[in-house]
Length: 237
Image (cartoon, rainbow, N blue to C red; front, side, top):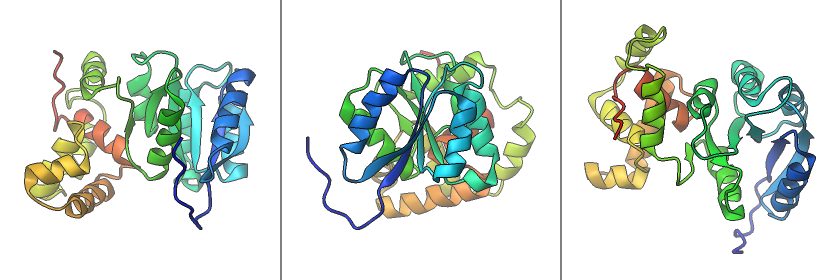
C-alpha cells in the first residue's frame, strides 16, 4: 500500500457508525493504519452517531444505512440540519451497490455512498474524497443508477422544493449552469475542463460558486439539486 506523503496537517477525524461491532473493529484497524486519518469514535446506532459527531468534532462519518432505532438516514438528516455540524461529511455504507435508499441518503445530506464490499483502498479514498468536499460515488454506482432512482422517485422538477430550486438556479451564470449539468453527468473537474477548454482550477471555481448560490453542502448535493430541479433529466437506459 502506497503511503501518503508526510503532512503537517491534522489527521482526518473519522467516526464509525454501524450496529455490527466486528465490522466497526475492522474499519478501525484499517483507518488507524493510515497516517493522515484516525478513528475518534464508534456508534452502534444513528442517535449515538449524531451525539458523537458533536462530541468528537468528526470530519467524516462512515454511516451504515440500516441500523436499529435511529437509522442512518435519520441520523444523516439530523447532522445536516445542525449548523454546528455543517462541516461534517457523511459517507453511507450499503450492503449492496444498488441500494433502495441510495438517493434518500443523498437527499438527506450524505456526500455519497460506498458498498461494504469495497476494497480497503476504496474505503480510505472515500474518506479523503468526502473530507475534501467532493461527491463520492463508487465505481459501480454510476450516474445512470442515480438517475434511475430519481426517476423512480418521481423527481422531474415537480417536487415540493422545485420552486425554491428554480429560484436558486436563476442566480447561476450561463457558464455555472453549464458546469452544473456536466457535474450532474458524473464528470470530474479535469474532464469538464477538457470539454470546456478551460483550466481545472476555473472549473473548480465555477463549481464552488454554484454550490454557494444553490446552498449545496457539497458536490453530491449539487448533483441532487440538478436532478430535483429538473435542470437535468434522468435517463433510464
